[in-house]
Length: 159
Image (cartoon, rainbow, N blue to C red; front, top):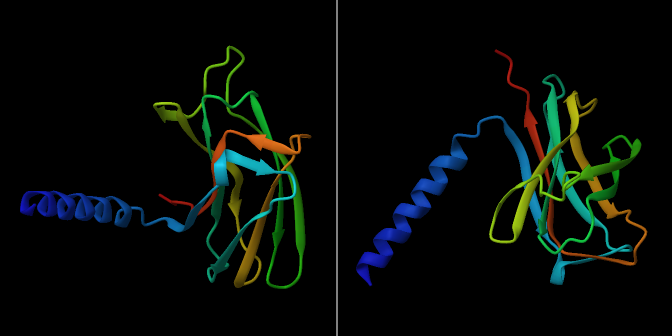
């Protein structure tokens, strides 16, 4: 029992060390899709506090799918609400598999992770809370075998 506790502590410390090394990360959160079923009416929302309006940022769309996902691509509607009331609507297509049906993401077992660049070198115009809302746009009532979607925002490294 003591050995297991020591192992758990070491794993936690290593995970903290790995995450603390990511100094460019401003925000990252992934949301699990219940039963791997993303209904067309389900909105996934991220509220992000942005204070830095001077630095450029990259914004990423994260997605995790199973090997049972029946399509090559994924359409997503992203609505971004800024603190000053501005609304930006985007329709994006992400390829989860290549033309031969090989999954594009990194994976283990039958789960594959992808992180797609959504916006590059963005300067947020005002500080405050930005809301990002995702809905699936695949023309099917319930999209199956998407297990998680997420948002990552990071400051661009200037060398």
